[in-house]
Amino acid sequence: MHGEAFKIDLVYMWVDGNDPEWQAKRNCYIGDSADQSQEVVGAARWRDNDELRYSLRSVEKYASWINHIYIVTDGQCPAWLNTANPKISIVDHSEIMPQGILPTFSSTAIESCIHRIPGLSEHFILGNDDTLFVKPTTKEIFFEGDKPIVRLMRFDRQKALRRGNYHKMIRRMQEYIVEDFGKKIYLAPHHNFDAYLRSDYEYCVNNLRADKWCATSQNRFRTDNDMHRAYVSYYMVASGHAKMRKVGRYNNVEGLFGRIKAFFANRFANDSRCINNYSRDYHKQLRKYNPIMICANDSERATDGDALRMKKFLEELFPQKSSFEK
Image 1 (tube, rainbow, N blue to C red):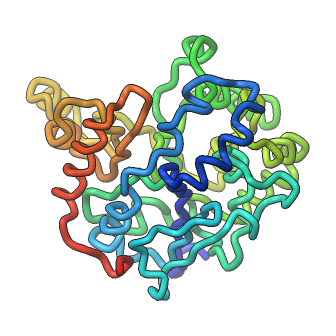
Image 2 (image 1 turned 60 degrees about the horizontal axis):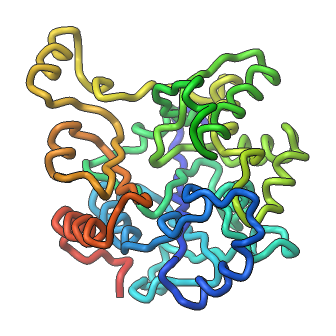
């Protein structure tokens, strides 16, 4: 397929954690989680701040080349979503996940079944509802020829042992890749839109540590023993099916002089940046790091006031309704 045109789909995982019915369903099971940390069962994990609305606006403005959009969710649909738009589909968990475990509230369980989405193209991008494009993009930002570009960033493996669920999972995926392929890829996913090949995703889940992927898909809440989709990214790099791109504040700055200038000007250029809800000045973060895409990152540190500020910020970035809205 090298050099040929191919379709690229976009998959979102979305939940309206503000919905009282959904909350009641979650609360029936939340005590069953072995990990009661805020990272695993805190409200911020599922809080909806209308990010998906603005992310779709960013797609229409900056990534109109996307072929089709799938929103994976649990019996929900955004009230504002124009479901008549032929470019968008709602995919219920029941369409792709083991029936006996539903409902599930685990992102890793859901991700382990993403490749089962009916009609999903071979080349696709996966993101959360809080990831957005903030500059014009092309297919080549995510695929070099027909190979996905895997974006990875610095990762402190020693600190990971003392940190939470996510960091422990990432470190373990790195160890599995060393064991399975002899490749040391001691970098972490950049926490934004990621490119995949559906065939590689399916191959990993069905053939590489399949028992662990199956166990992950059966969990209602995340655990330290879950498989993480980072394994698929590492596999694609290790097998030569993908191109690795290390991202950081300087990765789009050219040359040593450019780095020195960026350092003293405190203005960088990188592919992606997390902007935390609790940050004091979102616009300053955007100007400073000059990213292609951002994550409007929520956490338990964020207050209701922070959420309102973030929503206002996203509205300022994307004031125009998209064709994905009623």
